[in-house]
Image (tube, rainbow, N blue to C red; front, side, top):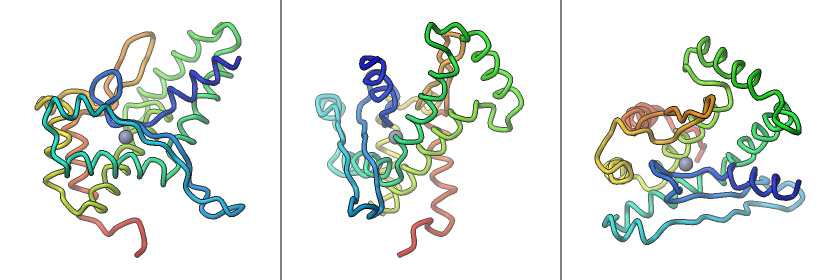
Length: 193
Ligand SMILES: [Zn+2]
């Protein structure tokens, strides 16, 4: 049980990655001052990968800002909640696996996003983290160059993936991420100054 919990927490870590294992990740929460708690979180990065691939200081700043945005917006909490719901629905011995996978497939087929609800939420979390990071750093070009480096220059590579029936499917491509970032930055900031 404890191992399962650790595994769920590990899986719920939100991250910037186009490869496995994640190049950067974050876990934490923003209590917004409730009970005198504020923002608590941890960010990890694969500095060896960043150094090998010659990420600039500003590109690393974008990654750190993106991870901070995940913590600021409590993204790991929503991911964890969906994971717990899925785990409970699967049953102790995964006996409901086929039904759950079928439900995910039907949801994805009917949804305009072509993604199950939890995956759509995760994708929006990534888009939001990109947007907040870009607004924080104020440097759209560096955000784009960073995302390009993360996918090794292949913009059609999946930025994140989700699983259906044991197969990994793209959550969104890096091209979609850049396009969405561009769109969001043309609109007013969601954070009041
Ligand atoms: Zn992320």
